[in-house]
Image (tube, rainbow, N blue to C red):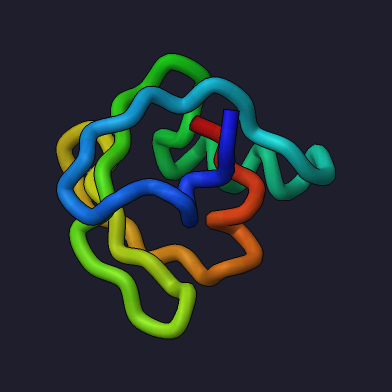
Length: 70
């Protein structure tokens, strides 16, 4: 298990766990980041990521990316 920030661009991964405060977990859950969901990184800039989750793209800052474990 490692943070999403360690994944390679274009690689499809499955979310294993979301860490952090309940508020953070709820926010990510509302964006589609739930255990078992497939996620892939589209691009990275200064630790911030644009990721493909379900049928959309989401931009996440480095603090949120560290909370998503694959």
